[in-house]
Image (cartoon, rainbow, N blue to C red):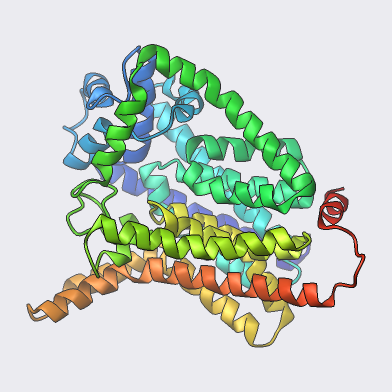
Length: 452
């Protein structure tokens, strides 16, 4: 290992350590520390005790019975423990943790979260570190130093994102493929809305990549069948209850409500970053912002789908496609900044464009940097601290501008990032198609050859 690579590794480990240390301090200082992990942990404990985890208040009763030495749960924690919105497959994977005492379980979960994010970051650094070493290291270090919220809340997104990135590396590098299949299957089982479009890309890519995606689906089904049988035996009406919980979370005042009446949509590190959270400013009506979001994101995904189906696979185009897909993933449905750590998958594409030179390299760096900053924890802590010190005149315009500053940046930059990389992807695909001679190798054969 050269001195430069050794220093890069030290910086990556140091930045990860910052998030772990600060996240641990936040978790200890807050009465709602590890709030998201408490939701899945006590939901699984409820199921292990033959209770219904989807029944309103079911996991809350287990928490109150087992956490007598803790303070009374806050309103936000009560909502998390009362309305379980995770799929039954999550219970299978959380069961080993739920069988441990809380003190040990949450420490192991925090360590696993940090480990998954660190491993994913090291793999993304490895992809294009020779082409653009400084760019890759700076972006990775910034992202890793802004993972305090996912560590402090224990949200499964940290593990889901890490495993999804590991799976992509395994697939595209053709190494440790069975491990990659298992990692992506776990990601899909816990949070399909985070890893689902990444899995779909490999289905559309064809060749060995479609085979790996179908293997992933098979493993996911293997995990799902016993989970559904288990939950159906204990809670035969779980589907209706889950549906009711999802509706309650999305209703005005619920945790997933993107509008101003949300109980805990918040801003900054806890804000909602899907496109609906920006569109509600124009019209606070789900009948408006939901279809509008689906229309915009659907159009972008359709362009990516057509380009992927029509042209042959290559690893360089794959990184560009993934860099376009992951920000759009954040915009379609409910997401928060800790889900946006999946932007790790855009770093290889940014490094590739930087190595090419010209104006495109500065555009890629600007877009990626803005996306990382506006979905990062530390920048929002600083910005909100500054906003709170302002004494703006009480007027409709000032209030609207203040809301816009806190709401628009994250979904807007994700939209810009997705459009930018989609434009580069489509343009490169079009140029390649124009240069391709007749009778060339079919895209399925090329994909198979690259996989081998």
